[in-house]
Image 1 (cartoon, rainbow, N blue to C red):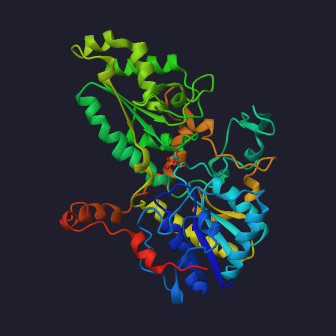
Image 2: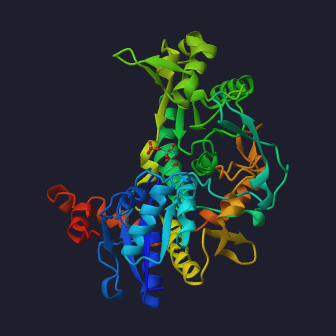
Image 3: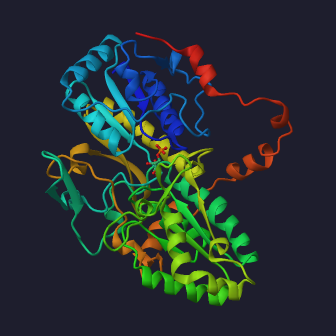
Length: 459
Ligand code: F6P
């Protein structure tokens, strides 16, 4: 193999550049050229295929830094549809003209689905990334534990996860942690929950912190490192009565409560909490306020003003309960050591897998007690259900204790290998040296996009 392509698709994560860097370093050693395709799949849909040569003379370009978050190639959520044969052929033809003999797509479940049709034309491999940690399986046969039902429109289906096995072993997990997850949890625990705690405590308030993760509760679970009083995950429908009771107990005891809610949390009817609390913006449009705001409204209604007026000297429930959405801060910035290291290893492995002649596969990060973390690969098909769909991995029920609203014993055991030593000394030194660098006050931010623009090539 003499030349490969690489692209980053889907939402960004802090470890994308680290994965690209790992791939380029390995390609340098094997004397393979690497072309980075700009803005994910949309770069290949452009007839001129904007791209960057990432390793001229087999040395890595200086703009590619594994300690910088985001992606120097740019990313998009544009995908190629499997049934669009014409587009697939056009893309294959363009890549062939570019001399690309294999393609690494760095992304999540949407990216594999976009990669699948291309794998009929040339070798492809997926380098995983997602802060949601939802690309993988809790155990191999989980892929087929889905039910398909006819949807409201003809030819459309809805998929429902079957209960599956009540227990699992950590060593069975396929793709233990995806690059970006550790950094997102670090942001949620440290900047989100721990910093909000002191305000809640000082002002006798109830704080509700909403974390990302879509329908998967891994970020919420990991946020336990910030010691929230209550964690709500999307996989366990909210028992509101039990929840409110726990909030009252905690408020009586410590005069404040910190709650973490995964954005995809659902009620006992399976309705997304974020979608049921509707309000209208100034223009009269209906807006969905999100899970944290919905919970706040529910607490204000059921606990009521009188409770807080009595305990907080005439303050209403509305001012006693406050919400914070951590949002994209979880996806950005410098990746912590765990993400950087393993993302780089996965990037290198992706090159090896292509060179070894595999196609349509995914490189994975595995863990066993004996070996610790190591990289491996698996056929992408192993992640698909019987209808060919890749579903986001859900937090296995055995990792969460719904009675205590905290990680279960196994949940704690799951987190330990990832987060013990996840932060490097250099991560802390970076803060010490650069956060208040006087130069920040006078120098403009230098965007990598400007430098990459100068290196752009076209077909
Ligand atoms: O999948 C990653 C993720 O960050 C989710 O946790 C979140 O719901 C979503 O992407 C946000 O997407 P966007 O950046 O398009 O708002």
